Image (cartoon, rainbow, N blue to C red):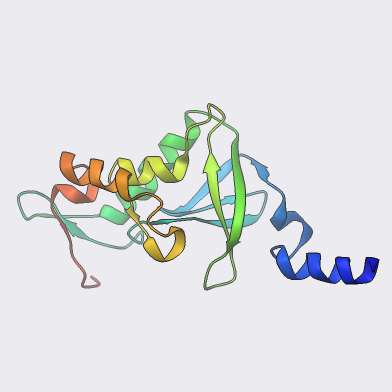
Length: 154
């Protein structure tokens, strides 16, 4: 019976013992929706930010580096209240742990990214978890919503 429970636990929990437990530490920003804590990369659940190289158009139609801007905004936000704590919810399509992360002051990092227009709600990850935050950003013309995302790679 104990063996059956151990096997069942391994099947239900994310791979690796540490992936099931929250991780707390100083976060390094990889890009606008990926951070690293203690050598472990974490995809922020339910959000999708432009890649660092991505170019968007601002309200006047001029190019700006929206991916770099998103990553920079995330780094500044995280550094304002350390450490960062991430609770794991599964794995992304690349096998990386997906998590919802919080600053030391309790602010939801994932929600903040979407609410400020630095990322969009990723329905495939979080089933529209941040749809209301996205509507706030869109209505305010915040972040990427101040213009348009250029879908071409430049």
